[in-house]
Image 1 (cartoon, rainbow, N blue to C red):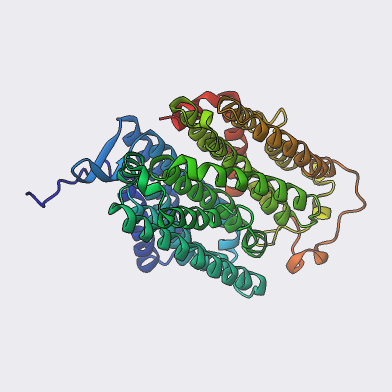
Image 2: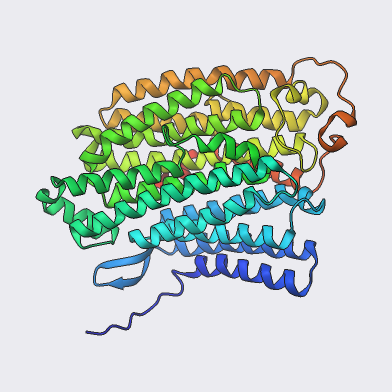
Length: 498
């Protein structure tokens, strides 16, 4: 038997580009010690990674690190979509971070290196073909974020958020690893497709208590990563304590990574009749609790955090159709998986636009402030306020935010095709509840206000100055992206279905 495996370097190109970006950032910071050069290298690396993922994905599915029919790296259309989206999100967050980095609030070299490392994990995650690669990639995406959350100098809230995030993530990882170990003990396999085949061909394995425990542990561990209720408590405190750009990354790229990991094990490895009821329950709890608690929020980032929790419920909802026999047919399952991926892409685009608008409306390096700080913002800064309003309306699923509207329509359609009309009704009711806080904040943007607060009342005595340069570009591009996705949603659906 030949133990030497051939390696398809073309399939690995996106990972090479992402990891190479992290190395180049370190070298640039060490040799040049010029913040601007370090940021440019990180930005070009992220852009190159997105292009590389798109080019490799356009050439059809490629596999490497294979033993027989089992492969640890499978790079196809969906992996390309995930890799490109993660890289573009990294590029956008890096742009939002420029004002704070220029102000010296965080060390530039370390910040860009950690962001590039996290991007590498996200790129690898989309192509993972076995549990070990999946979990290692997910941790590579998450580990740098512990430091990024607490990297803001002199901020106690940032340090507390980092510790909270670290403790919860370590517990979640431990639970996931224990579930993976039990699955290996039951089946003797770690590759996702092999696990799925073994559990499908040998029904007696599914009836073992050890298998039930393994499935439950894996689902619980990954539910922490997507901030699904009741494993969500870390998210609002962490988002609010983190710097605004890092909170944006947590709410977009990190959320995308958790969804991709959960979808990989549900679609390819775990039995649908066991995962379906659990996912349906998680979806109902997550969207309902997220929306109800968001109604009471007065801090901007906490509202976006609870909104993100509710959106995770919408993402999980199509997978809940697996609880019914009608939802486990081949066509219905494919529609549910595609709907979950498509909704996630629509959501992260709108969420990045929302965080970019809040960053543009706040002083450089400041936190998200309160909702009262946004009152009348569209009157003072028309295009920035309009961009935030469009993002919020899109998250609510109303026109002209067509991306959010099509996202919810996609989820409801997948649920109806899977025979889960009751879950579609829950989604519709929660969408109505969500309108209350999304439209309240949107209306406040154009509400009349008293005389604007003087500079001395703003954090650090800084005044909100007109936004120029990189933050303005990120906000404009993110807003245009949400409009384009709303006009041509079928592009995302086609890529998600591959």
